[in-house]
Length: 67
Image 1 (cartoon, helix red, strand yellow):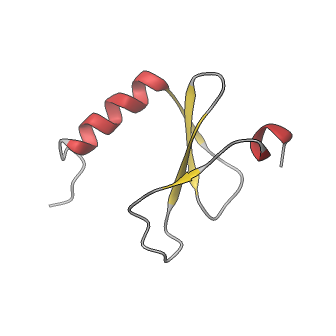
Image 2 (tube, rainbow, N blue to C red):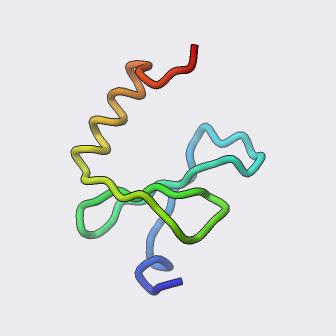
């Protein structure tokens, strides 16, 4: 784990079911937001802050709800 990764404050989703199927999110010093699997320190997705905000608005609108 890089020192950059160990210094990152990851927050667990409030929707985590406790079964290990969770994601964690972190704001980064460069203005991006990172998302990764809570159980795996490694690959992550990085989003520009405005992309992340747009995604959250769409989630709240139900755009990604399963029928």
